[in-house]
Length: 547
Image (cartoon, rainbow, N blue to C red):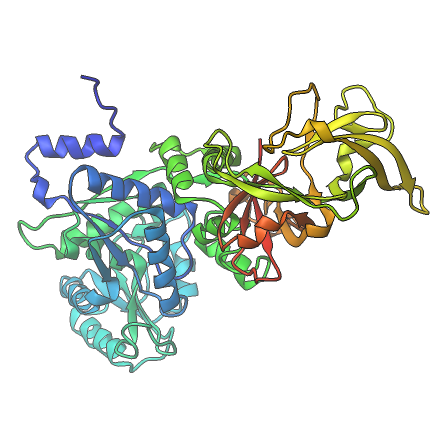
């Protein structure tokens, strides 16, 4: 029997199970903050948490860490849930950190009573300045030695709304000399009275910080294994310190393990930075197809399967690395090749006039929807006297290694006739206006299939009188720098040519397209019908090139 290859998280779980940890107590969670859309970096955490739950026949709790009413909104809850479902995963239970505000307040009072938390009247700027840096010891707050009685009294006043926003905070009393900056008396509570929480409304004037909430929520929910990216590694000692001081005897303490975050070249996977792109209107919202959000990728034409396969391919590791965007593109290209309808679209047209074809004749020819499938799987495309082909497919005088259309040469039209170019007419500026051709009537059989004849090139085409005008969005990387995530001046590296739009001409079958339908525009690339499309205004987003 072939031995199963385990990733390092599975090895940890297997070791715990062998050491006597009860399988029934296994429980995982995915804890997004509802302050924006999920991006492909979140997809990595989603994939491995839910796959581990499937493997060990347990479940995942979807917990929204809603601790900041300034940035968080109810609408983001629905977007996040839709994205997880779109990826193909379901959670056992939906919870909110705000459900535990009473317990967190109770836990905070325990720390105060132990002399391990205090109310500080300084501003957050003063507190940050006193923390210093990794090379200097921090300075203790002048309020650090307040009595337990005074701290309890002041904390109660904070809760009751007797202070204004920013007037004071509650801090943990740990170690201002610690080399870990997270342990230098971190803020646990701040006052936010001016904003209503989307769930608790005006019930609270004080809100717990993410660091105070996160670990305690895992503890309350009895999460057995807490998996997160390496950016939280330095927060682990703080989470442990909090739990050590509030936990009950014999209660389960969540085990935190880190894996490398997903870094994607020419992209930014920081929700805070993506939020800036949206607020500054550098992009057209969170679901702009140039964004690495799951909604943006979906709108661009990516499929859940391609994203999950990409995540599976890159795997889990403890080592930080940058994944090239081409690997993600390979994954979607591989999937779209199997599922996309084939259609013919001409982007930069030049007109062919078939002189020996009847003026009023129209033939409806057979064309495959998919390659290598049953012959019945076809559609009808119209053929007439006037045909569009791509301008770049014609060269007046043939050159070496140019195997497309030239004067005196023959080409085959996809699923249609063989044509020969005889002469051209020009515009006033000297450019070619149209090409006059003749067609070989015998090159197409009565059954609609092209007869064998050695022709080096087959071109896609569209009948002029039947062509549907469509709008095409063509995308490039949003950032010019490969490792844009690491730049402080990342906004200076925006690619101003990341979006180009053009008009193209499509065969009439394109009218049947519905939102998010996937197509291969033959010889051009893979495209997806955009959600902003209307019946008489079809918009297609380019997903990826053919190669």
